[in-house]
Length: 453
Image (tube, rainbow, N blue to C red; front, side, top):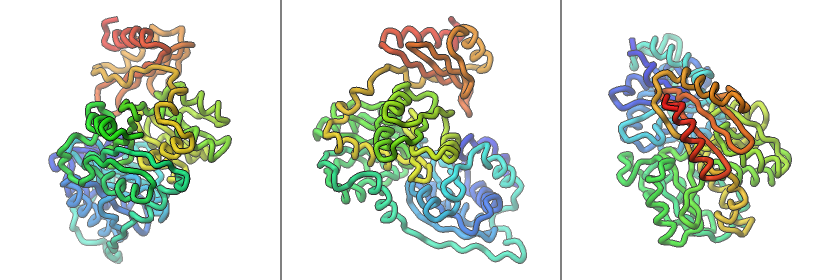
């Protein structure tokens, strides 16, 4: 009987330290459970460059094939390549990655056919319960069931051709672009992609190395963008791109070597997608800046606000036929990428926008810089519910909703406070009109969160 797998099953994926929390045996059990749950003839399987990924992926494949289901092994891939393969081949997919986590971690992202999400509320709990009841990996295949076949597939060229459809390649300007793969999976795709673009690439840490020797593959932390900012300055680059370990997220640096928020990129990409799809629906999560719905409306689109998290956004994209969805955290979702997120697709759209406008990125973004924000501030709180109610009471005169935690809006500022899915934390985001107002209101809400206000 497998150990309790609850500690490694999170809201959206499986994640844990290898091999103490997440080992080959667990991967084999999950493979068997997923094969039974998904009821498909084959599963596409990718993995990142982490040192534990080959063993975990092999154990998972062994579990899948023991249930009579075939495996298409893609080998080393980005997560969005697995989503692409799942969508293009109409098969479920699995990707071994721990994204931005340190090297000792690994994890597993699952999707249904067409890259549809598998999260806590869309099957992940059932898969965990089935996995916990599975026989040991290596147990005989059930009678009257032949073992599934494993086949190899290289989808890089097919994927590169797909990326090129998100820009007018003939119209791209000869930009200089610095890109930092952080020794993660973007290193597989970015050099090959730029060979097909009329641009100069300044590559940083493209060598695939699962120890991540240069800096963590977590570009949401400003310190991990330092080398990229330096490269933009040194080479006079027009744009900087930073990718996380599995390249499903991208972060952007302008020609002044300044980091750009995910909200501004969401607004910019939304404009581009509305140019190509007039009147389309655009999704944005509730911690995005108010500039996002404003820009969508100004450009004739229909903005829809969602909860934070990819499984919610992907589901609403499918329901509404939204052409694009963005999150402040650097996840960008595209209808034409099977409603899945891709830092590489977002990069193509941004370069296309810059080329069409004939403007630098800072010039292109200047009209969108209407607000200032705190970024996400995390505070450890023992009784999260009590803290949220204390805050709700203190701001009773504001416009409140409970879509995801508590959002309170006033005419000139707003905030959202929401509990973490996995830790005893409250996450605070504040947005205002001026730096002074932002500092005052952020301190005010933090005092309530910490019980000192």
